[in-house]
Amino acid sequence: FVKPIPKPTSTPKPAVAKKDEDRRLRLANNLDANRQDLLSKFILISEHTFKTLDTTKILFTDKEFKPLPYKLQLDSTRKNLIFEPVWIENTTYNLILDKDFATDSLGKQFMKKDTISFNSKKESDYGSMDIRFDNIDTAQQTILLLERDGKTYLKHTIAAARLNIKLFPPGEYQVSILLDKNKNGKWDTGNYWKKLQPEIVIARKQSLTIRPNWDNELRLNLSEFYQQ
Image (cartoon, rainbow, N blue to C red; front, side, top):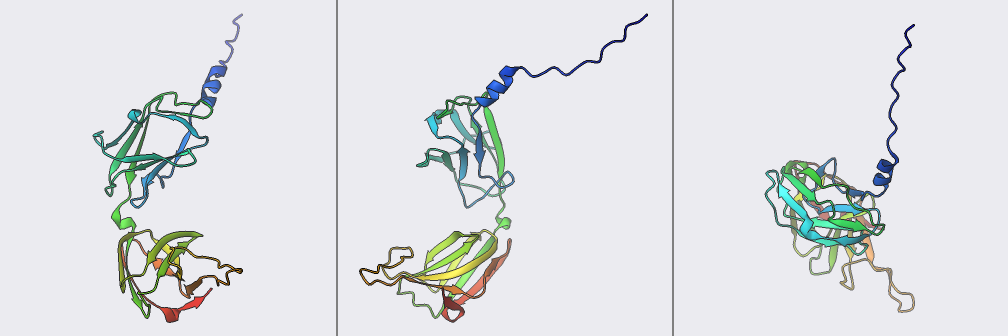
């Protein structure tokens, strides 16, 4: 009589592995499909505030692991670590973080050294913009606003009859103009007690579409705008 050999069963993971995972520092970033926006900074985002940070244990390199210069700052929330190098289009970068480069407020660290590799976007991913202003008094404090999905992508004081921007994110934008009477660079609601009226914002009836890898030209005339 031959006894059947029992089927092997999967070995449960030791409890210490789960414990180690709970102690691991987890960071997110602002890359777009692992590509870096040429117009933005690279940001490492922590769920909890950073308690300690050793910048000597951070290395930013090119594809060949040659160190590159950059500026680094921790924002006021102490959750966002902001890197500001000089981006070159369509280029591979490496961010090398030693195991104990940082500790969050819960005492979490990396379990081992980590390398984040990513590519920068191409200039052809953006559109250029050439805007001409007609019937707009550039002597006044007049501010051009381009907005999309509730976010302001451009706030530009109109001081000349023409504006050229080489790289601008593609998309459809709402166009408006702020008549900034007190010249503080923002819209003010006014003051009832001081008898000050809210500052005037006028919007363009048509949106502006920026196409990638395209010279986008636009003429803006106040007759195309209406008061919001």
